[in-house]
Image 1: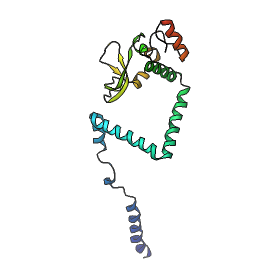
Image 2 (image 1 turned 120 degrees about the vertical axis):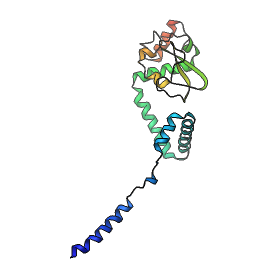
Image 3 (image 1 turned 180 degrees about the vertical axis):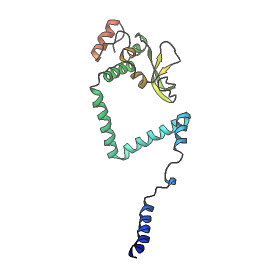
Length: 189
């Protein structure tokens, strides 16, 4: 008899605790897939979305010192991880040289892709990642087909022997790049 009295109490208590933990569908983003499709198909939507997020992160860095410290720590971590990576250092040295010297873009014998540095950010379709809305000043144009471009991220994924100019395959440091440039008669990096 006592057990029959206890059952209604137990079931109502159980229902009350479950009611507070229920996640309603209205509290989540229902149109997430629609937004994802729009992000990948509509370049104007994607540009607005990326600009909005960049502005948000910039403002948050200014107003939230804790977030600013965390972002700086993450950036320093990436730099320290890549400092010992030989391929990363070589590519960064070469990119720095290209950005500083016009002759590095025009005079060097490039194998598969040659650099094109623009005064302002330009939009091209990257044939590596198929992203059209990637705006950059430095693009890598195919030496065989001038309509094919790579962004710097996709160019960096290439094998070093394919990515670097001819005769620069063994160059690892700034001094070695400078010595090879003098031997070839191009401008000093």
